[in-house]
Length: 179
Image: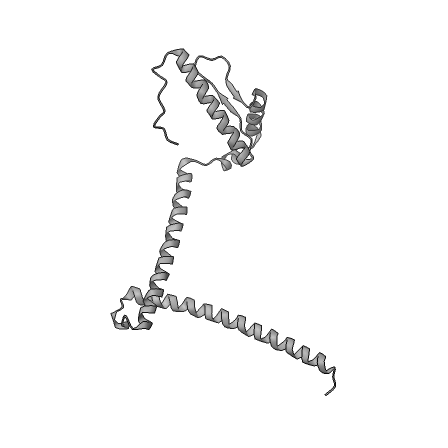
């Protein structure tokens, strides 16, 4: 959220301050309604404004009180399980970003090794020019390629066996046991 246009209401006169609070509460209510609809959750707002005797409640006073009662009726440990503190949220975001970066780095490494392999095959690069990192990368590439080849070989053998089995069945049906 961009806070560039937000101004403090501490230096305003009371009537202007009240107008700003009402405008912000209306905006907050709209956002709460959208969040409630989009996420399928119950939301209740209770806001105590300075100088007001009655709090602002949304969607209604009874509905907001019911939501608070329901929350307070839950056992303490269950309530804490659903809370996410800022540090935990940021750690989850950092972990997700690190996982993404590692995945991208792995893809780049695989592409580099594919390119290096092609250069070796084409003769553009000699094997004795390679460093330890490149040789280890090629070993990983070869291991992955070998696994893929073994899987493909297995699939092709199964397909051939199915084809042979279906051909034998058809030949048996055509002759009906007569030579």
